[in-house]
Image (cartoon, rainbow, N blue to C red; front, side):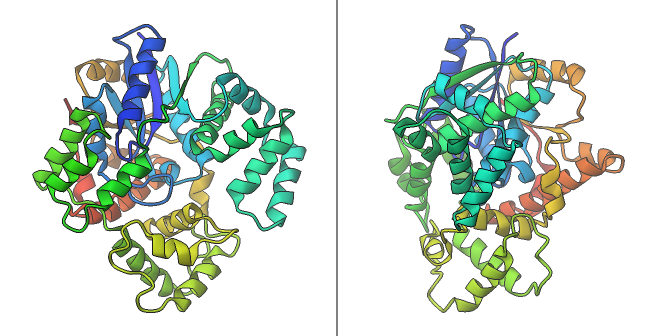
Length: 417
């Protein structure tokens, strides 16, 4: 049995994701291959709540060809690309059934990406020196890290620059790096698929959704989104929305409330994850400088806040991750946990149910289908308790934005199709 793993956000699910699933099956020459994505649960890598709840994105994926959908906890999903990739790859390999891992890229070639990943050793003195040198110039960590990678490899030229400026290609490098760390015997087949540049990105689709605010009428959403998502995932989203299953998150309200919490925190939040390098002090000063009208209520894409907050040193993704970590209660100690301590099942179809039975026999990690399954485990596994309770707090924040009860996550069951 071929089981293809995919690390994703599906924020939201679009035609590029459907293409990745179908092309992966074509490449392994097995139309019945199991496809198993692991997706961000409540918050995504850029540091904000996903635009759709995890169960809706799971339903979208299952209707578009996935068989089992696993969840990536907050501490790995709301994180820099290296941690996001490592958490996702570790989750997939820990199932014990993965034969292939597929991902996309924008720039470069599979051969060049493999070469760059093989040459980059983040523990080497040369890499550390190059990273330190770049950071000393006051650039952001992602920019410094890209400079350190460039300094570590023998290849030069415009193609290297394009790779290091492409989010999807950077993620591809991170997936390869994670596989090098975890799959030391190279048992997993790697499938790299070029992204179809004619298809709309998740960013563009989120802009179209937020362009329908504040009413978010079903008709306006359909007109705006038709052609950007496959028909079944679009129908799954609109159907759940029309039934009152969720609301689209008001990120402007979320940020204003979070800033108020930070303003009232005194000096007690310096130990929060991603608040280092005096970001906590910077945010305090930023909050003090804000005036009425600086953060308008209709700023659904948070452009006004970005104009005020982003600097050469602090990217918006870094700021959003730090704010989300403060709101959810993630301290710096949690980001030292490299491997997720459990497998969370978000949904499955009939073929996926059979695969889950095999996972139950192969994995060394506990498999959590219902949140109540974790309660007994939490008492005997400190790491599991920390990661799971953090996810529940983050889910409570997200569910309030989705118009759901903050305890919704505790009663959520896997999606079955």
